[in-house]
Image (cartoon, rainbow, N blue to C red; front, side):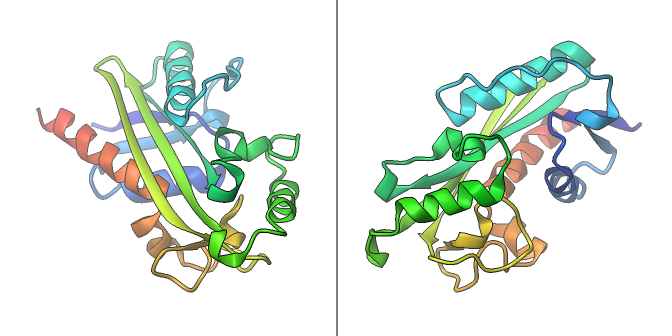
Length: 201
């Protein structure tokens, strides 16, 4: 029997990512996005952490649709910026989702920072909320920033982030390579394992 699960996002790339990662473990799962359900007022991301924001969005999705809901909150943390932009990553330049402006602002803020101090990491929290309870998983992908964007297979800060152990940016890696190491990939695989255990149980 097919089970529908809502990803509380309109981001097509995130939807595809969730389908790629959950599919092998949970083949009977149909993942739908916010554009596939009746509209509801989306809650502001008022949490102080990635976990709090992910839970806010997942709880709201489940409350409004009755569907088991997955939501994530993720962002870039830059050591030289005291962990910022962090939970403000998507709206760092002032307008939500302006990837180019956000990226350029971060590059401007670290322009005088020596290369050896450009350590950064992508962090992600994924929350699941359903009638069977709540699950939270997290992932972290450490790496460093570069000065100029490279690559087109990604979004957000991917073109200026080089994961540890790689020479390519996140935006230069193919989807399979990125899923294997990414912060969201880690968190989603951990979630898939827990959901599979729930289904099996």
